[in-house]
Structures are given as structure tokens and as C-alpha cells.
Image (cartoon, rainbow, N blue to C red; front, side):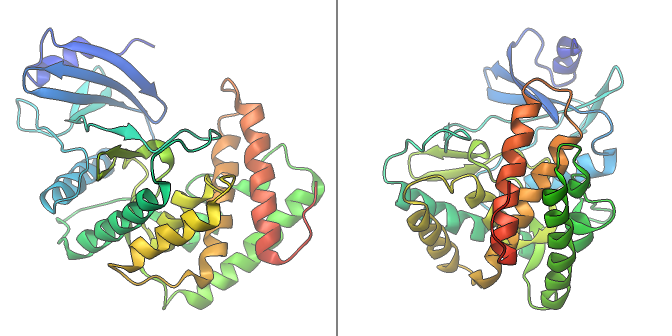
Length: 315
């Protein structure tokens, strides 16, 4: 696929700017270097979000930037629009944030003073949630909902995890049992759970460290959801760390220093986060490396679901 990079850059007045491809999944992202600074040029995956959702994400980022959070700041095109269309592709430009990622999946953490970092990360997630609650959303603001239906309904946001074609009979039964009991649990706790706008994808790659600063990028999957979901997402891929329990405690300490969170239900959200990956990968089994990733996601979700249900691990 060849993206119309030059045509897109011209809409922002960045003709002839140096531009390098850096990533491609839900967005195809290019780093653009200009005299005004570096930016991320993002071509949106067709059909993943509609125009209202895409514009809402940019409005949200702009509001969080003004609230003092370190997030990518949208840049309007010469037309004044934040979202443009080039050759049928939706495209935007946001600021490029400095820093190094917290880490890479399946690679041991390699950061100085990880407990201090996770404490600061917990506090930054709390700051995000508080800023979201304080923001008066513009009329028409629309984002996806990581609510009970979005996680466990008939058509979850990331797919019907219990129908992943690689599941054996025992694991499928486990996931179906988890789905029923988790839905009952969520429904019983609905009135007491903290719910609002969440990032929804605070994996290592989407957290940048820049000295003492914590920066958050990639709000593509952000929407309305349970605040525990952000905490679970920040933790779930770190469970193999030898000091995981200390990292978890530090993250929760940082969060609770600014905003209360009852962690007694966290095991449910860890399992919920894990099964979303099983649904997500099932729709991408033709991509390179997807078979191995699918097995890892299933194994991980099986372990967390069995633990939540108090069942022995199978498989």
C-alpha cells in the first residue's frame, strides 16, 4: 500500500518535509520533521472509526493537552480542519512527543527505578481520569464504550473471544463460563464502579518516559469505560516481571495518591483485558506472526480466567 504522503503534507503546509514511516496497524504513522518541530502524520485504517469518532478523538486530545496532560496535540490543517481526506483516506497530524517507550511486550523491563516509574504512571492515569471528568464534552462527541456490552456482549468491541477458531473445547467452555460470570459480576457492581473516558490501551509502547515526565500516546481505542480497565491494561503485560507484585503496588499507590480505586475487583479486569486480545487477534489471523501471537493470547487469557473463576488451569 502506498499512502498519499506528499498530498497529505501539502494540506498542512509541510511540502518537502522529511517524512519516515514508523508504524502501521490501526493507523499508518509517519514521523514528519519540520522547522516547527516533529509531528506524527496518521493515515486511518478504513472502516475502523467513522469521521465523528475520529474528530472526537482529536477534540479529546486537544482538551487533555490544555488540561496539562502530556498527550499528542492535534494540529489543524491550512483549511482549519483537524481531520482531512486524501484519496479517500482519513488523515490527521498531531505533535510528536519526545521520550522512550516504557518497554516492549515480552521483553524484560529495562528502566531505572521501575517502582518510581510505575508510581508516577499510576498518578498520571489518575490525572487523566480526573481531567476527563472535568471536561465538558462538545455536542456530538462520540467514542466507543468499553462497558459490559463492549467487553462481554454479543458483539464486543474487539470481537467474540469465545469463538476464536484456535480454542480447544475445554478453553472455549472456560471462556464461555467466564463470560457469563463476569457479566453477572459487572452488572452487580455497575453502580459502584468508576466509569468515564479512558485511554483503554496503556500498554508499554503507548507510555513514553522523558526524564520525570510520563507521556501517553495512541488514543485510537480510547472511549468510555471502567477506570479499572486502564489499570489492568497497564499491568497485564508486566506479569512476567520478577517484581510484578511490587510494580502493581506502586502503580496503585500512585493512582490512589490522587484518586481512589478499589482494587478488590482488579482480577476481573485483568481477565477482561486478556480476553479482548483473544477476540482482537481472531480477526487478524492472516497477518504475519498471528498464529504464535494467538497462542500466547489464548494461554494468557486461559490462565487469568481460570484464576478469576477459581478453577485449575487447563491446557
